[in-house]
Length: 396
Image (cartoon, rainbow, N blue to C red):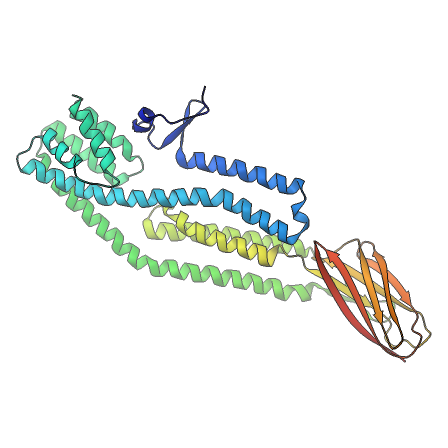
């Protein structure tokens, strides 16, 4: 048995139009694309975890962008194409009703009128009209053929409603040409009202985008302002000042703000899509924009670790006195265990040494041989990047 099936007769069947068979069961094309995209994204994500791509900011960013692109771009691109085709079908359907009404008014039979409109070059609707004409030509009753024709328009509320009116008129023996002309005029009026409403609502969508950008700016500003405020300064035994890590989970705060931006991206996209088209399905074009902005913000402002290095030394040391300094290293306000490179540059001194930083703290002692100004440089490697803190001390 074949895994995927899309034979021509199945593709033309109105019962399963727009679907693909998987293990003998029909699934809509958009869901099939989403399933494949999610499967590939999950494989890529766990492959990145297996190869430890999260250890580096660059590789982690590339992994997230790749996973996001695989999940969203194929599905969003398909939905955009689907919505474009939907608009063309809705526009051409009005012309179809008007052309069919004119053909019937000219004295053509229903069969001749269907043949006439099937030869008109409709780009999106033509394949369905030709199918209707073929069914009628095969001797299928118009009522049955039109019922099958109507099944192609699942999700087209106005078209299905108009088709039901046409079918009832045909069954009751009413004036089909007159009804077709009336329906085409009504649908055209509805379309014009929708376009007018959409033109008014574009200003609202612009306002929503501005609100989204301002919201992101406020969250980034809050995150930036809270960073120095959350570095709690405490008095140390040496008489200087140091940083106390681990009081607040700064990383959790960043993740909460990042999730807020992503949730806001979905909310803005859904609201804008519904405002413009009065349908949730119209949100995918906006979703492509807002989620892309959210991912970029997450990569540039949320993912990068906030590495803090603090050097604590005596305030007034003198020559020949051993100077013990405390080195504290934290990432997102959490202490880490690492190795720090220390450089001491003085009037007649140049030292390079290494000290182990355990649970965020390490100690190093050196004895200045002469008075003067000394520069202490501490370098830490984290996540493939190098972070440096420089401090000066005057020895009397």
